[in-house]
Image (cartoon, rainbow, N blue to C red; front, top):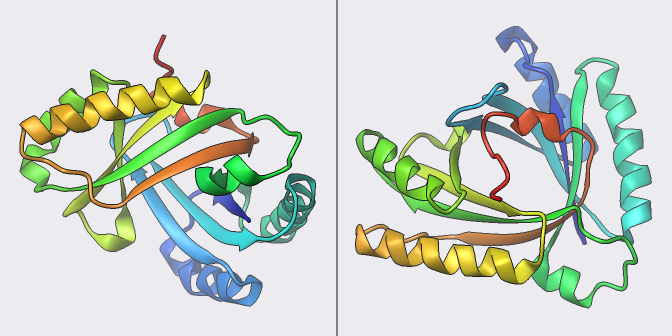
Length: 192
């Protein structure tokens, strides 16, 4: 199983009803991710699951991106697998990178402290605009070995615990395709 994300250019409020209908028609959900910093802080996207191998998911995603781009310019196509799936997948395509997302319930007034702490481990904040601002996500990315990401996540979670913050829902992902990493410029920089 693969998760496909098609990020679009910003959508005018008058276009939202038609965009929502398009999402329904193609079986997708809409997410609007707001990055805490960066050159492209607001990222509306369609997201949907696709069965099959990576190559089939890529063909499907590109076809859907062409269809979407007739009305809503697609600026990024990203294909992910949950790590439990990736561990048993027979795909020959190596991951571009691994990601971890941890949801942290937090008041907006304490986000600067969470941001500062997260950055020590290479993490950065975002939130789903449609769900409000009481939860945010800490994201860590690793282009090297998965073990390096796991060690950083363990260290971050220990530091969060010392501050009384505990990630709720956590997602571990293997990203196999990303057409436009530059959308993360200024937000999620690699840890060296």
